[in-house]
Image (cartoon, rainbow, N blue to C red):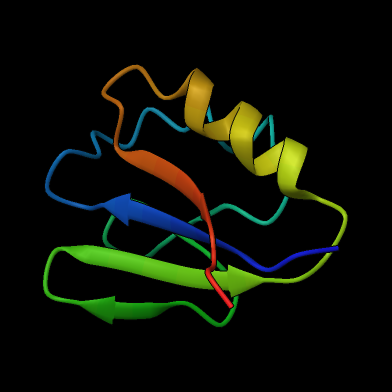
Length: 77
């Protein structure tokens, strides 16, 4: 199992929440956009790193985002 990083461009996010039904880790934040557990927020970007078996769920959430605000990338060792 390898680490992967999920990033959300919060400036592109429209709060449509198609990601929520694909990956249960996504949730609605107080600002009406998405959030992830233990995510770092740096300006307009939300980033979280995981090392679990749920990468496919994250990739499905990214694919479902109609504004392409979510990306999933492997973390290089």
